[in-house]
Image (cartoon, rainbow, N blue to C red; front, top):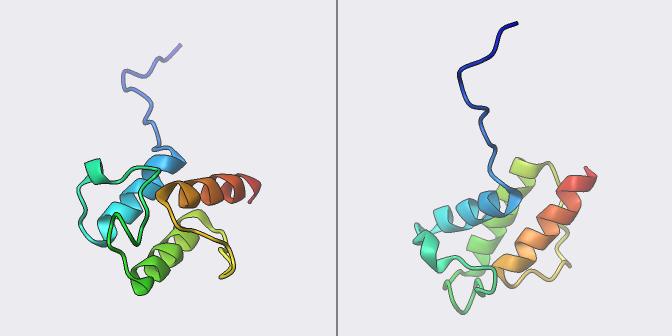
Length: 88
């Protein structure tokens, strides 16, 4: 019987992936990205930044985020992606 000597690679959680996408948008330190952080108030994102984040999340997770979904905090994005990526 063959036993692999390599460890299985752990894929990042949805939360980690969402944090990475958000922090990458404006090169924000990962320590500033918290679930409770407001994209506009705390992270100083403008509307175009949020639209770009939504597009990136849609591409990465193969989901559609309608315009009318209220997404204000990092946690809102994590929750929406977690709920809809699992259903896809």
